[in-house]
Length: 240
Image (cartoon, rainbow, N blue to C red; front, side):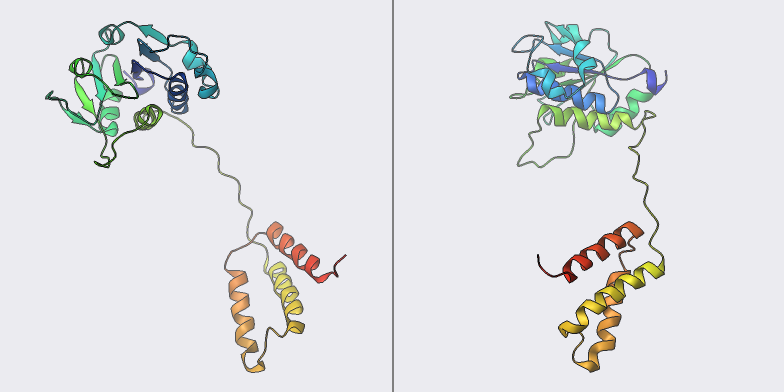
């Protein structure tokens, strides 16, 4: 089964705040995941707070399914991953999001990634349903991720197996021709000369050389050079 057709189901077990459900949906859609399942959301479903927090990920929320138990939510899944920073006494393989994504992309059968409630995470009974534990190296003094952060870590690693497109980079203009840069340098030189910047005379050549090096290094394009020339022209004019 191809990675495109083997996208994991995201299962939120007893989520509490509608805002967090919406943010999780947003994180999912950012990285190409659309199937959201929930187990006994505390405030019921649908939740009016989820939509605004999803910031446009309505297709995820509209198709979300709600189940009474975790076992029902993952009943059709052959590969289940429980996200937790603690093993809770259950001996299971422990994988990073990257390792889990690599498995999901190549194995047959549906996969599910479970996330626990914001306050307490997954219960031992939930973890017992999983084939493996999914966790990340994290600060032992502060190991608490919010729900959307946890979802986005797993979703991002999965996205590496999808043909998602990088956001287009802004086309960069080429550096300005030397003639324009020389004009800028001469303009600034003309303004600094009467201010005594190049005194003493014995240091004038070195000061001009350093100024040229400073102005040449950024590789400004012609629009940037024109803007700087405009700034200098404004400074030259008398105050109104």
